[in-house]
Image (tube, rainbow, N blue to C red; front, side):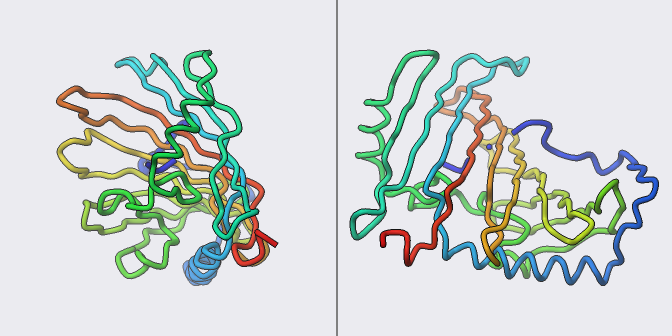
Length: 240
């Protein structure tokens, strides 16, 4: 399950006025993008030791019907890191014990909260993942206050993904907002906002917000999920 939202997809059609913002050339953005892809690949050497999770079910108007929130940490004392549920609540009730039982029975989790089996085809697509580098095309660069925005398109086996990356004026990646434009039949829509940070030379995912609607046993469920990742450690030295 991938972690996910707020005001998600930055509209392609809304003009952005950035007085005094010089922007960046296409050549500069190409260099930034290549650097970010390399830095994102380096993040495989790190793991987030702390994750905060929020899962909300929404009604048709977007209001919250029910929620679950919790915090997990990785215990590095053994040969393999182990997920520890610190605290959890559901609709105001303490469900820490239930979460611990759930994590104890579930397959091992990745740093973003997904199971080891992985998401459906294409649902793991992000703009700087080296896995999708050859399937990604970029649109025209446009200046905004303090940086630039770059539209992108990723062709995946699970359908196309469209989004916008925001770079700072110095070329650091700030966030990417994207939408799956032709998801599987059981998913009405899905969109996400990915926030990035840096750990040494690596570009890590600091937060993920996702919103969507899916059919569960023929009943449509609208959901919103958010994940925040912190306390990053090198995998090879985390247990030392």
